[in-house]
Length: 265
Length: 299
Image (cartoon, rainbow over all chains, first blue to last red; front, side, top):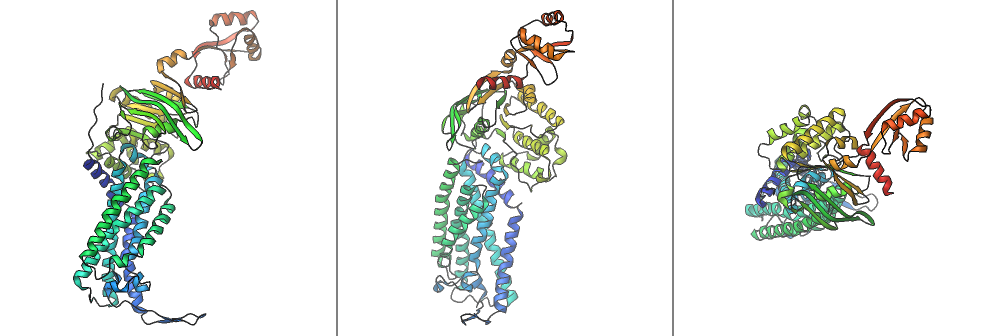
């Protein structure tokens, strides 16, 4: 007697996978810890740099004097201006761009936990299509990363109010800042597929996925200020969107191939 | 139609040949006892059937379709090694997650139903990491039962279960196979338990299928023996050893004569030699003994 099996369409499979992953993501304590860090970090950065503004430190060995400079505007906690280039000073580095590293921690722990707990066995036994898994993890990772960016943004606003920094939009203007935030939100789609790939390669070895993700992330990190300056335009948004789509599709395909070819337990 | 049909399956892990052209046929609705020594290839075969590792060669068909078919794989329940649960989640949350994974519409009722089947409804609120080994096994089986699977692949599911747990498991699996037509592939080293439920057997050694048979065929091939006790066991053993080809003393303290002989002939023979038999019975060797004999023959 031939057995009839229910046809599982791509849409149905993906929607159930997304349900599982969103349910998992938002029942993880880690997500709330990361969101909390993203909210508090800019407040601390803005308050402390404002408090220490103008403080001169002297290196006792070389005698070189360093003056701590605070942010001129709250918006600098979001990004630096395009003319700052790849600025390596504190105000150029300690901004929203740090969230991309935080997202690596979130995504790597989220994906490798499937393999560490053995849940991958349940998952892949009933899910023959690895693409569903990769797409879902990428989408959920992007949403998680975007929430972290928004939490940082909110924290920066609060930090600006607390530290009394001006909200002067300067040459960027409101539209530049809006474009900048949108670009940063879209740019997370470039990073998350890298973290997902590192995690499916490392499987249960969380440390390996974190090292891989942070190493590759570090290379791309240098490009973030140039891609998403405070005075962003629609061009930056388009570039980040295109990059996100290309990385998600390309690296997603590689992640799927890795899962297909490698042992899942 | 066969539920599982494997032909010429090969798998190497580096230089080690885990499977060397394994063939396996599991009829639909069977409880298939998959037996073999450690490292014989049982778990590797089961993992391939579940799509968790990829074979180097051969073919695997589930209900006539390739094992990679997404539709058929959605109806496979699995418990391999340990249950795949998140340790910090409650039993209930782990079950609900798997229900969502299986797209079960009435998830809550379904989870309650399978937890009741394995008598774990009272532990639903416990954190998974706080459950005992036996409880975890039951949860794993409950998870495998979610979504009305048509094929269950269970690797050592009764490990860590107490006597009551084993009885429950027997009842559940027998009911699934007999009343719901679920095919069950079950590997276990506890052959006494397997013997009580299996309808078919597959004995694997060195990555190859040594033999496949039904429970009836096994029954027929299990030799009959005569077991007896006397007051002078040493002399009895010596006397019987001189007359019959295979005489052994078992763990229960009986002398077993495996030759095809009538019990009264043994009693008469011993009486003529001055030994009185205090107890005598005929029985068949168990699956465990058959398996051990088979393994010895192969060496």
